[in-house]
Image (cartoon, rainbow, N blue to C red; front, side):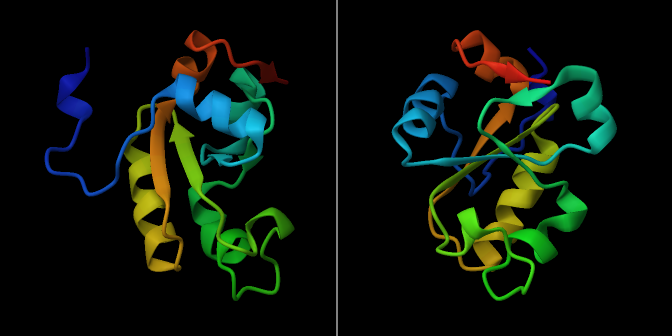
Length: 121
């Protein structure tokens, strides 16, 4: 479904939501929601996910930024999601340019829910 949204030849690997859920629970993966605040108010976010809108990535996720979130200062493995996957893929490319070496997209919050992940309001 919505195959036209998938970019062919993307360099960003996708992580299965069940694997992401397992790794987030184990503390070996940081999940990032790159949607805007209004979207979160409507649907909530994955429990445990950081909220960093795409427009704030350089400020809040760049390891050299004075405002980098403490959870990201060491460039941990990350998985990003949005509503359809497009913003998550663009954000993942940005994170690779910032020096992150293990970056995935999970596409959408729905996949997280389908894998049994909880949602926080």
